[in-house]
Image 1 (cartoon, rainbow, N blue to C red):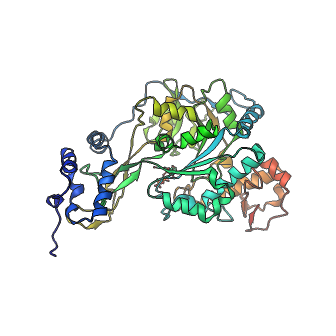
Image 2: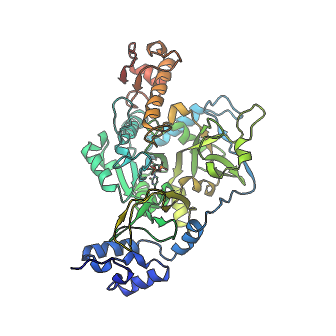
Length: 492
Ligand code: UTP
């Protein structure tokens, strides 16, 4: 057999209809190697192509690859109204105990599901495999999936009194679905009942060549596809049958979290109660926020835009608003979005059943390895060569009638693992777990058992499992540790 550089001419033999549809939108190069593919490779390539919205592609390329769309911010941008973490303080005190009771009642009645989005590629962390398999426990190195599973186990024990299960839905992507399910099997579902853990893959989008808008080929028989963003969860929840499953179980509210934050309160009664029962909430979609550390912190900001709760991305936030301060010097737009939401089953159904619902795409420039359709060679780009299109879950917030925001304390609940080193890394995550544990020990009257550096930082590493304690009061009830040695690693 002679080797030659395959060209589009090699697509000879491809189904005419397929070739015609692709030629019409300038994407026929994806069939460049058709002639040399085996039957099953052809079938899988055709299947991938069929799953794309080909007709919509030219408009997306025009809008997001050839141009960089400016966010449409709306005319009236105000800070979001937030319920403060300290319920007795702030401009509007609220009755935490009452809302927490109402939230616990929802859990005990089996009306609450946990939902974790775990379909991301985790490219910044650079970990092979699903991010949920990455070590999250500061001392035990238990995987992130287990950190969340333990919260769900504890929540059921504490609040559902062994009654109805708290089902856990996990969104994967076609790329990490199988290894995720296998990991759970291998770990016997971390003590959860297998029947109550559901996995479903999210949708994908083609990765597009940044210079030409052409769909990149991963291999000769495969397109380069990327997960369609955490916003894809709002459709995938519905199309996968997860929403039907929830309805069968009587679930009404979905507690949404990401896989990369081992400190997250996977289910939080007070937040649930506020979301479902506060007079200014329509009970559709609510958010938690942390106060921004400084104006330059790169987090989305929860605002009120034309009267609707909206997240404005850091990069879209007008400079003047970003730096605006209150009379006391604090940031006016201080509500950092941390990707913790409660979403109602009814809201997801309304979005999906009410005709076409499309969240806006966001453009990300990334390095995506590809197979060159002209030479058949694999290319590992040295710089960003591709545009990925993703939707973000928070873009659904303005679609809710009335959406509330609850402040939470950063150290209490926000320690994401995003990067291999530096900010939001395994190291900062361990530090934050220790800080929270030290704070709980202090609140429980055992602050003197934590060794400190001259700067007052804990001089040890501490991890507290939710199975031991979900807050400081529970830690006291669980029994306090003796004095901790300098540099010690303690798992409670
Ligand atoms: P990130 O925005 O941090 O993206 O996801 P990522 O894919 O994990 O990491 P990078 O950007 O490639 O480094 C936040 C959360 O949303 C989920 C992730 O799994 C994580 O829990 N996610 C993200 C999805 O489930 N699907 C997506 O398409 C994107």
